[in-house]
Image (cartoon, rainbow, N blue to C red; front, side, top):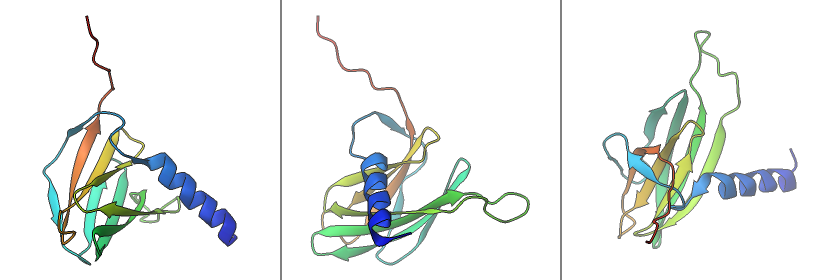
Length: 130
């Protein structure tokens, strides 16, 4: 794949899966803490995600690879996808797994740690006024 096509794929992926609080989600499991350059492994439905982050100034540079859990043949049938995001200190980014769950990554105020929540997506309903 050419560099231009790869860049377009990454840009589309970031635009499509990094959701910054647009729809509701409810915490599904306990929050997990991540230290710089320490890997994390998450099982979310039929998906498996592994990742790490590096502090860079006042932000957390997150790298996450998501793929299907291998079947009985222990070989993944699809190619995993890499997700990269720069998360400002005190901010968060959400990754939609496509199965009704999200991974929400929070960068600490000092950018020295991150936490991740597995969340169940819920339907968004705007408040109505009467």
